[in-house]
Length: 230
Ligand SMILES: NC(=O)c1ccc[n+]([C@@H]2O[C@H](COP(=O)([O-])OP(=O)(O)OC[C@H]3O[C@@H](n4cnc5c(N)ncnc54)[C@H](OP(=O)(O)O)[C@@H]3O)[C@@H](O)[C@H]2O)c1
Figure (cartoon, protein in one colour):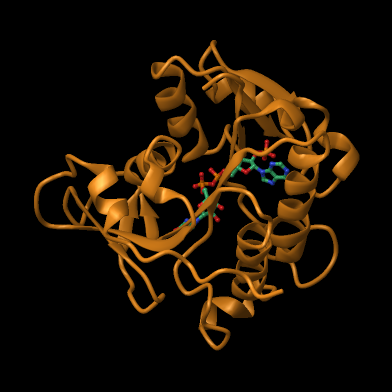
C-alpha cells in the first residue's frame, strides 16, 4: 500500500498479531493505543506507536489522515456508566476514528473487529453496559461511512485454534463458537488485500478441517451488505 496502515488497538493480543503480519508484507504500520508501556512491551521494532485514546478525538493526531487502511480492534470497558462504559469505545471511539481518517479527504479501507451476537439485544452478554447494542452501533457507523469496509464478527477468542484449523464464515448472526486470535488477525489483514472482502459483514469461527488456502474465495462466497438507507 502506498501509505500507512493504522491498527487502533494494535498493542493488544489480536492487534499485535495483525501488526506482525502487516510488517511481514512490507507495510508501514502505525499503532494507536493509550499505554506506551504496553506498546514497548508488545510491539515489534518496525511498528510506529502513537499514544491516543479513541474516546478523546483530539488525541488521535494526524496519522489517521494519511492512512490507506485502518483496522479497529479496541477492547471495551464494561462499566454501566462513565468513561469506561462500552459506548465510549465501541461507538463514540469508532466515530472519532472515522472522522479523523476522513478529515483531510482520506478514503481508507476500514476493518472493524466486532463480535458475534452484536444483533441480539436480549443476549445475556448485553447486560454488561449494553455492550452488544454499542457494538452494533459501531458497525452501523462503519457501514454508513461511505468508505470501503469489512466488519468481522469473531466468535469467542482463543489463543490456539482449539475447534480446528478450518475457518468458517457465516452471515446473519445466528451462530456461536470459537475462533483463534491468529485466524481473526489473518482474516482482518487478508480483508485489505482481497477485493471481495469490501462491503461485507460476517461471523468467523474455527472448525475441524484443513486451514484456508484462499481467503479471496472465502470472501467471494459472502453476500454484500444491503446499501445503507438515506
Ligand atoms: N475475548 C473474546 O472472546 C472476544 C470475542 C469477540 C470479540 N472480541 C474483541 O476482539 C478485539 C480484540 O481483542 P484482544 O483480545 O486483542 O483485546 P486486548 O488484548 O484487550 O487489546 C485491546 C487493545 O485495545 C486498546 N485500547 C483499549 N481501550 C482503548 C482506548 N480507549 N483507546 C485506544 N486504544 C484502546 C488496548 O491498548 P491500551 O490499553 O494501551 O489503550 C489494546 O491494545 C476486542 O475488540 C474484543 O472486544 C473479543
